[in-house]
Length: 233
Image 1: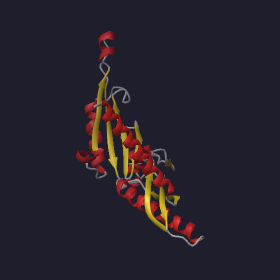
Image 2: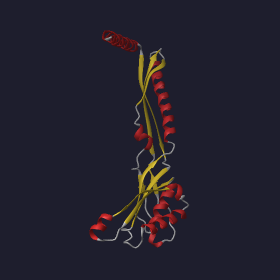
Image 3: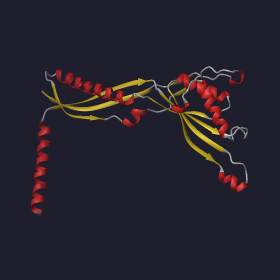
């Protein structure tokens, strides 16, 4: 039985070596294909922290929540759909050790879909005294579909490159015998949130209504690289 197992391993190794030799002996051309696109993010995540300490104990978290909800609804944001509670915290440890009042806080994440709305959120919340607001990240909702399209474009470019190279020596690019996607899907699909530029804010203390704060979001770049091998005909 042991001898039979060894023979099978030897035969398998010979078969693999033969296949590899046949592949190496085939005339082929190696090429790269690249495709990229810049898109405006349509998912903008805003973090909002409601902290009783920020209001100098004048408003409870519950009061701040009602204020937050009414302010967002004022600018036509569907809070039930777009506003999500992250966590709730309070300093019970400090309370039990020092006998002080418990100061609570709640963290929310708000989803908006354009820079104008994001600007209005920042402005309106600052106007009512909720200033612990930050933009977390930006995303593009059609990322997966876009990546698929770019992979097709990159593959076509690799074939076109192979055809161009071989045409110089009166040969043609045949079937693809190897194609590899070299893209980093993790960063390409979801991008980064660093490209946020504030162009200026209104003087909120002197106004009753808020014009959108002028925010520009850096376009997200999606890039695909394909490595391919084509038979030479």
